[in-house]
Image (tube, rainbow, N blue to C red; front, side):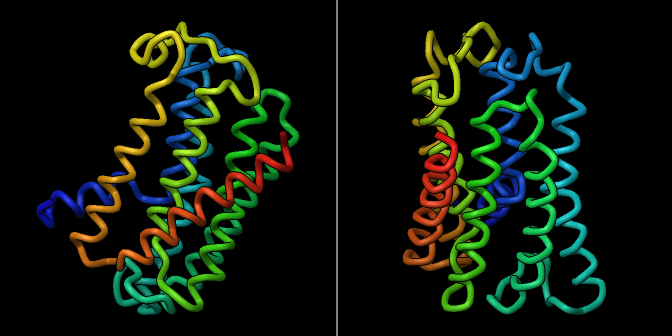
Length: 219
């Protein structure tokens, strides 16, 4: 994979975007779980999730770069990632507190947000010893989320939406797509020499583990 393509793919699959992606996937596959017939009616929710879990954490990194606390927004060293991880944890927790008591938010999505928080804290802990891949932690969470949707965890899946019709009577292809994307993410991170094989695998394990822990508490 060329470096420009790898960089583009890394940006598109940035770990801060995973919660927003999970919400969009859920709304496409089963908008009725949110009490609406289509994703368009829940765009304010999508925007809120995007702002809390991507825009504000990204703004923290941008300000750190402007204040010369970090050398690059890519956060190439473990030390540079400490403050951004803490800032991200604050906004992720804010997101979880905002949604956990909302009866209009499906349990599976609440579980995914909690799992993302657990994974983030695990990544933060491991970061003290190794620059584990946050990209792969995010993808690992998405893979577990897609498997959960395929098996209808947290409620029956209605396939009348666009994505449901594309994927078939059940979203059986959803996990395969997520795994394929995960492979491309791993390839892009290795191509950019951002991580070693061990850091890639470690990130994937942490992402999966965080979601499993969260699901154990919810289901």
